[in-house]
Length: 201
Image (cartoon, rainbow, N blue to C red; front, side, top):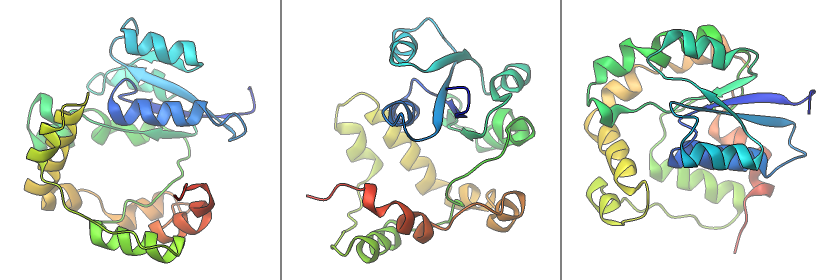
């Protein structure tokens, strides 16, 4: 356990964050452990992650000191912000993780954050898997109508990306990201390395 690399997961009790924490915990041979960051370590969801084996740590994306402590010693950080709490692109970019996060995290790995369309990603999956993968656009309103836990949050996230795409993509310079971490992969390279892990029916 001591030799495993720590992945700090912001928003660990949400739909995306908890999925990543569970994925890390379900792969004991993967070389990583999950540090689940949450504002409320006493919530039922936080306690459940702790029972599964995650290190649960109190942190708030708008509390600089809590981020320093939570990111200390981390090999990588997965960040989700809470746009729908304030609906302000300016606040997203001025505060919390966007302003200070990279100062506290260690080395990061993963995909270089390419600005790919759904159709482009489907084409990459088709090429890598040798099986047709199709993209179908689903509106934010449809996501909100699904009724599963987190459906409304997903709809809000997709609406933000749709309505503020220039802001969303403009703040993410790929060349800067690659200069900070040359180990970042393109989506196609990531697929080539991980296609065997994608279950096909």
